[in-house]
Length: 197
Image (cartoon, rainbow, N blue to C red; front, side, top):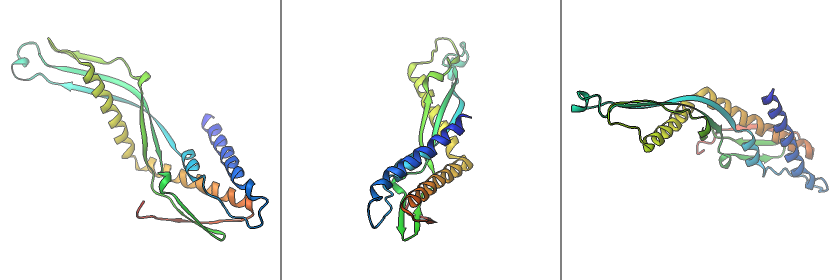
């Protein structure tokens, strides 16, 4: 239900942006499309994925420490939630209108950001050998590793990246068609591949 409300909000926001662009053109004789809000539109298409993950710190005791109560041994385990943002680089999107045809260059989606919800990080479950403790630096390193693991999982999820690319294309298409309808032009969109993107 919440995602349906977000989608409706995004469509309304898209229409408002299109209206704001088209209204100054209403009194002009020659109507030209202004696609200057492409960056804002691309930001609307950002896909957010919520992850629940675990991260582990482990260090075995070595040498003589093995024989005297596992000195040097430590293990810690945390659970956390995080958000991975996937989308397209808006600076690489190019919209080239030519009459009623529009060529659109859209790069593939990438990971735009990874945020671990610090408030969701569980108290570390840890176990240590004698005279061994888990330091603050090691806990911070475990959090950093958690963020890197979350990013790696998202980067390897090709279906998710493909979905983010398609979502961006759908949003850009709606934007172009809305701008066109406001100035009386029915655009035909041609998706292009930009090898430099």
